[in-house]
Length: 292
Image 1 (tube, one colour):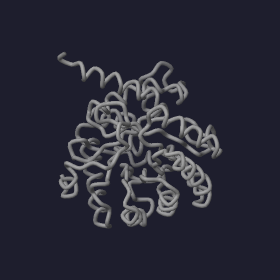
Image 2 (tube, one colour):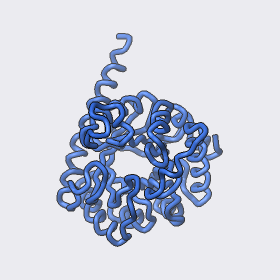
Image 3 (cartoon, one colour):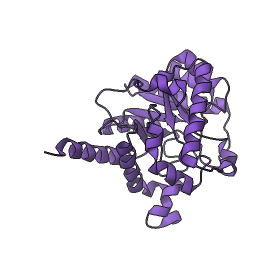
């Protein structure tokens, strides 16, 4: 375990009291303000629709709403920074004005800064700080929680980087090295969360192994955010397989929420907040009555 991990072992970023619905596990709802996201692209690419959806997710029990303006699906290309800003800033500002805790899903420091200035209170960087060398110093200056995702490269060629000996230990160690690197640039280790990056530079087999050993990441002492929602690796486990539309994988996603909560994850990032909240409520009720 790194020195940064040791520092954080008994600390957690601030969360909204009473949110999440399950023992030690929060729910982060997804708002994609994009025309091309893999599961819901185009559904909320207009600001008014995105804001309405984000408020609905809060009502369903989301502790955070993660707003993104650039698709990170495998093979996706970049959009200009100006276009990303145009998509997300009105949504971030409006949701924050409605009292919604907002996370900004971006790999660009300029977008992160602008979003926080418009009310976002967390930065979710799927590149793990690799896409923009200014990201870590910017987050350090902003003083907000920072989600570091395991990713070995950009979406367009991530599949070529999916080579591991022991994927669980390598993902853990690579994440901890990134923690040390960003903390050396000023990021407060008490504000760092880890995301194993399910599906990012990983085959389905790699992803299943990570999901089954989330306890290894949790044991680092850092809060762990799990993003399995509707992802392609779930197709092998559902009726219809690859032919099953991504939006029809919410039942499978809810099962991963249960696994994440049981492993001690800090939270899950999902499209269907209602489904995951129900799972966590059932888990909470079961734990409360265990041994009674």
